[in-house]
Length: 281
Image (cartoon, rainbow, N blue to C red; front, side, top):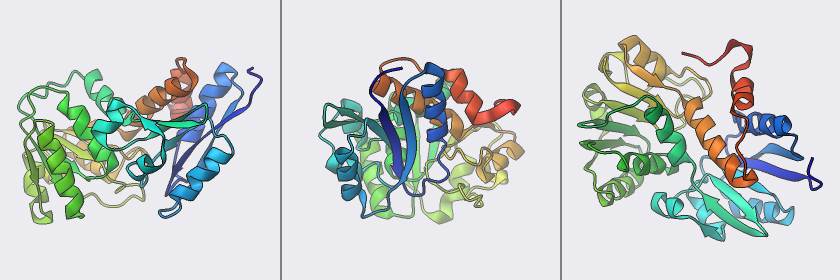
């Protein structure tokens, strides 16, 4: 064990649903590291004071989830090129008193699609959401060849316009969708992504099973519950699904490497996610 005890955490609101503490603590325990990871609820309006507190206790590093992925950049000391491109961060490392921000959501999002050998050529993409997670998604997709168009739906039109502009700057075609067009756009989309918290409380999806193509890929970044209503609808339609826990695990692996400078024990992380029943198929 290392002599110095280090504490890591995740900040956001809500935070009770987060599986990050369990994942990272399992990794720390497996490797025998003298570290712990906790959840820290930080409401909007409390971010600055909370980060001041984390500095005061010399937090070793932390993850950032909704709704702070964009605003956190106002209170860090440095960030890398990926964060600059995305405009949001989900991982912060305390480097000798300096908060350095990273975005592991980009690799976390795209890796499960690469694992499936997806050919994006000619794809029309539909993204629900326009916050920090959606920004990471579009940066990841911009690295793929052949995407025809990205459609966006978000109730906050200012955020939709910002994301649309970002997509166009990345060299892709973007279109903002009204609520009346959700089902029509979904029915012609090759890749549907939920980048909002909708589903955490078992809410009904905005997209019906009858409006999902059989040859579509449906990706929900919500990881708890594992099977959201959107994914259930996708399965009913016969579409391929990508689970939110896949992105969660990949971004956690990348965060762990930033903090600890070693590969995490992935099987231990998976075991705490799925228990004795194994990964869902």
